Length: 124
Picture 1: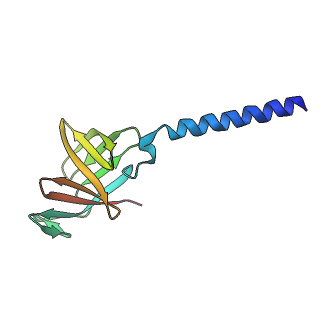
Picture 2 (picture 1 turned 60 degrees about the vertical axis):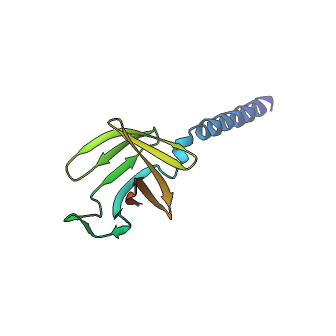
Picture 3 (picture 1 turned 90 degrees about the horizontal axis):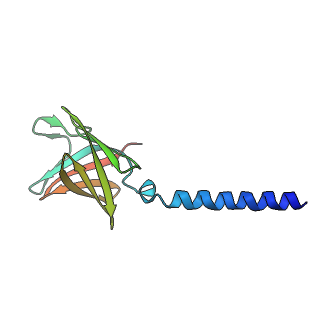
């Protein structure tokens, strides 16, 4: 009987420690984590949803935002790795020393650089 109590206590402690370990990883629960693909571009207040500069917008650019604060950016011609961080609902994405901020607006990731915006939908 005494061994059963000790076993139950050890199991409870193990569960508590595993929950604490999971909750300490702030980025894993972030809504930014996942795979995203471009669906629209906005320039000078005009939104383009099918083509921009003779290129299809959907999937033209892809982001893979990972739990470990790294990311992969894929474009039609290149692929690059970078990092990301999140503070107060704003993500900062950095590749090769250049950074851009993004927010989740209406379930879309929106990157905004001086009014030039790229809208992304999360892949399912």
